[in-house]
Length: 417
Image 1 (cartoon, rainbow, N blue to C red):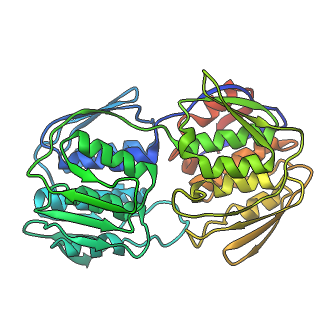
Image 2 (cartoon, one colour):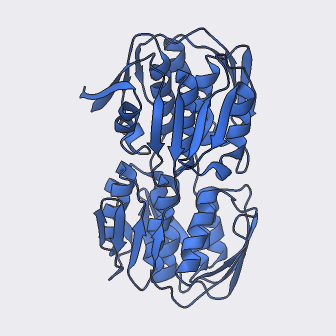
Image 3 (cartoon, rainbow, N blue to C red):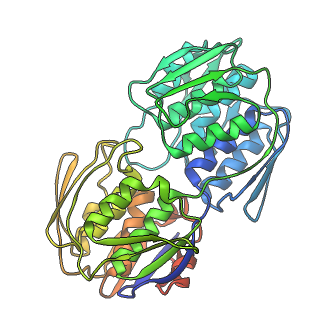
């Protein structure tokens, strides 16, 4: 396994180009199962989860070729089985369930794995697909689904699940009749999926709102489609500018989709300006101020930025309160930040952060994707050397992060453990 060695204390300055969004690319890649023609995607990030998805698509009968950010997929003779060997590393693999049922009338998908940040059950996916006519059994760790033909349905989600919305949206595109999804997720990645499906001939309205309406089509064609930029990577580099006291210009930055984050960071003392080259991010002055945040579904404060912003709070003047309302186990980075000198107290789903003067470098261990990003950020600001272990989590969601950081002045390198 690899680890990152970081010598902190260097203000980051320069330009960073934001990669394509992993969370948008994964469902869009799985949506290619629905198509009867080949499709080409651009701005696809080079990430571990992307390559796992492409391997899975190849096994499912959708030969995929990756070349420098461009993916070409040609659906052929489909297979219904997504094996455990691939699915175990990536929770998003359950997104092949709806498309397989829509195309084949059957699916055999291993229960998914991924980051250990919460239960994230797939019951909302299954109950919605059952309303569309599917039947499910659980056998030896596999979800086995069958149907004669999916039918349009009216589904009201218990809460706005991103994955559930994406799975049912894809399935509904080939179902017979009309489907309505209420209390649907409004995340930009869901909108990007809908826009891609529309480009392929789907009839969808309401994307970006809590009510989606889909008219099923007999088939969908191919197209060429660019993946949206990654708002979480952008947010992470924004925090990197703030935590090191540097100044970064983010190219290809989806600033309009970061409103909730930018409002809180502005309140902490950061400054933002849209320039010809991209979004400029820096501190307004030398000090930062504590704020309170509560994670919420989009357009609220993103849970995927909670750990990174907590690292920034650790160096702010005054207290900050973090409430995690999305995942029940997303504070695993706290004890590692404490090892670096942070003052954080946990109480259930809340964390009270009291600012300290500085972080001190230490060996730390990443527990999940965004936790690993928070530890890298803390290491960039720390006095001395920080070793971040288990960075395979980081490689699931950040494209060449140490290369990008070195380009803006960071002293960071990758080594074998």
